[in-house]
Image 1: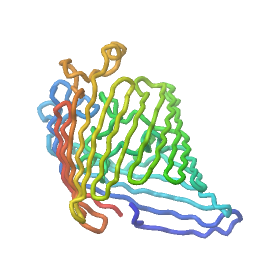
Image 2: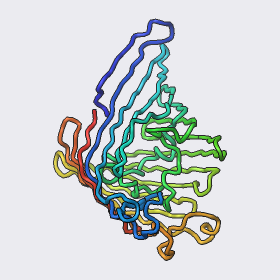
Image 3: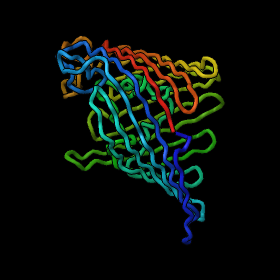
Image 4: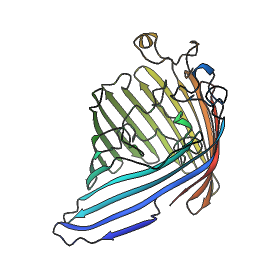
Amino acid sequence: MKKVLFATTALIATAGMAAAELNISGYGRFGLTYDSGGPNAALEGTGGYPSNGNDRAVNGVSKTNIISRLRLQFDYSTETDSGVEIGGRMRAEADNDNNAPQVMLWSAPRFYVSYGGFTVGVGNINGAFEYMPGTYLETRAAGAGLDGAQFVSHIGNVNDEYFNWDYYDSDGNVTNGVEAMYSAGGFGAHLSYSTNVGAVAMDRIAANVSYTFGDWTVALAHQSSDNAWEDKTAVSISGDLGQFGVRVAYADNEGIDKFGLYGNVELGAASKLVAWVTDEDAVSAADVAAGRNDNRDSIATSNGQEGTSFGINYSYDLGGGASFETGYRRGSNDNNTFQAGVAFSF
């Protein structure tokens, strides 16, 4: 998205303003996805990750489908005479998943004020837990394949409780919050707060800190939430060793531990290979009795997310902002996905 499709600069003659900019960028992706479905046919099509399942005999959805996305991103900013940057972001996005094409949807806006290494954002915020370094794959999709393959590789995604933290929603608005970010040298810090005043009042507060020294980055994050099972603590250590990269990560997802080991290697000038493995602990019987989803393999009605997941991703740079992407992921519930296609940015 670094290459701008369209940019316009309007010089504002009023006092206190220097210049305003609107940058439009984005990306597209398209290809094929295969989903083997989960191990329990009775649960197929009931929602949740990672086995929302494709079984034509159960939910009428083929295991192999076309997958695509188009995203347009609008970044707007201005700078005052005193050097303060004021701006924001909106996105428009359309997906085709499981042969269910989606019309273009707009995100709610995010606004920010930035000076030096300090930034305050409001609205559709990025979220401190989401922006913790060392939690997403070093791939174009930030997960396996074209669309991340439900991001099973993320240490915060457990027990069908996926993405239960604040993040920038590209086709709607899941949060309305405020955040503060600071960076200086190798140090970074991020604090975020959001509130939901809908049917159920819910507050979330999260923070992360990180430090980069040489080729290594360490990061720590915590989230506290009024909503059940959303308290999280995570830590990661990442190493960028030139041609090779390594990372280990761990999260306590309110009693469900998940560990991750990750590696990537550049194969020549145009190819990159990423591999990963995670292990998710079982939910406690006490939490299940209190109403939490049950990921235990020993329970016949469970999606069986307890245990080990792994995957591999291959990317080949085609030039001009385009690449060929393919990835395989096997979930701990025996769900297999394979995706292949083309992604391009503009």
